[in-house]
Image (cartoon, rainbow, N blue to C red; front, side, top):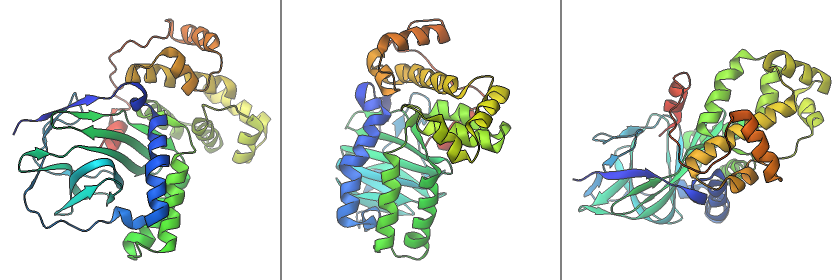
Length: 330
């Protein structure tokens, strides 16, 4: 069986904004209409499915045994059809259906029948204590297209998941109104917080334990809304302290003001998006919250010493953040 190459998506499909649009346009309407039961399909009786072997550019390689889910995951089929192996059984999914993969569960995300690769467009949502990691992929008979992985930093997503898991998985009330409401709220929150490239969140996550809890909370609040105008008074209120105290913590531990931190974060995200999406610098500047492109270009050059460019650039994760990334990448 010849392995199918996994290649990265580029352009608008490779943005976090696209992922949030897919949730809004496809997942939320199905949840509203059918409830959380869409993630609990009936196993298929077919015994002919075999996994599709992938050859990746660096993260997967060829798989001969099932993956082991490193986090609870929701897989949702946006278009087409596909086979998924979970807990020893194969499931045949069609567009508008999904499946829940518990943490630690062996699974194959894509299967074929009689050497036939089924074309499908998939959304992946992995649940983590910080919120969620999200990406999407497309399967064709000869290529596996995969988007970058983005994080959505919102602890409410994890809290809602825990409540949903208790209701739907532990108690078995998959089709209850409570289960439906919790999952609707979970996916709704995924569309409200800013999306952050995985590598950028890994750097922030490494820094947080070294900060006082109040400052760490402020950093998370700013990360969640980095692409929008800020009222620092509201951030201070959420942290339960004064604006003066927040500013003092930023200067003492991060050697910058809160506004400077947001500017630095926007530019780091922009740099990573230029690498991963190959979108134009103008489009990237808008996605990270700049309304004036010339202002963005000037700040980018001052920070990185080069002009923003959409040319592809190699990127390798820092050895310090590689272990964190390996826990997120499915």
